[in-house]
Picture 1 (cartoon, rainbow, N blue to C red):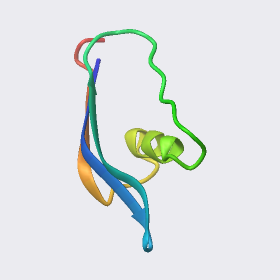
Picture 2 (tube, rainbow, N blue to C red):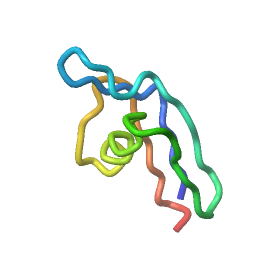
Picture 3 (cartoon, one colour):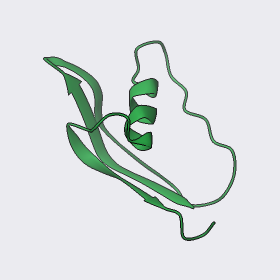
Picture 4 (cartoon, rainbow, N blue to C red):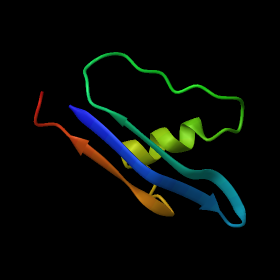
Length: 66
């Protein structure tokens, strides 16, 4: 499995929760998403899992390696 997050942004009204983040995970393993309260961690995970739609950017999940 690979995960590619490209220039992901999410805003709620006038408040920016996630501002153009990008990262890729290409190898199996355990990964963590860390940050202070209000940093957007839950919002990022909700976008990756499809619970929320991003304001801009994209998430690509490739399950072909499973």
